[in-house]
Image (cartoon, rainbow, N blue to C red; front, side, top):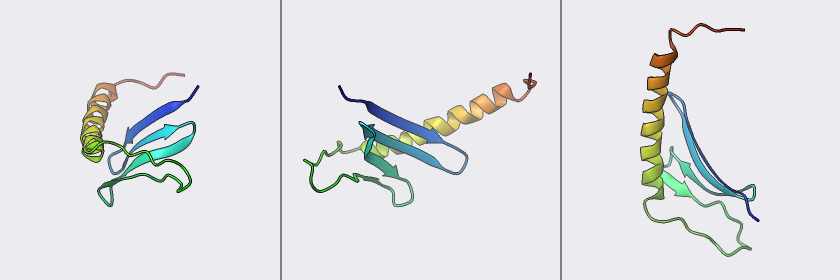
Length: 82
């Protein structure tokens, strides 16, 4: 059995998207260099992600930031309870 994980997160100024397999990072979006990075060691059979993976990550960041704004507006009048 394998554990496959996708992480998508954002804030007002930063974001992340990464794919992991069994705790090892297989791909992540480098939003500074504007490219996908595959940090796999040279001794394994290299796995490549499809063309458009980085562009998809950029689109996911826009969706994440829009959702963040919606949640902020929806939660602004909620009182913090013990």
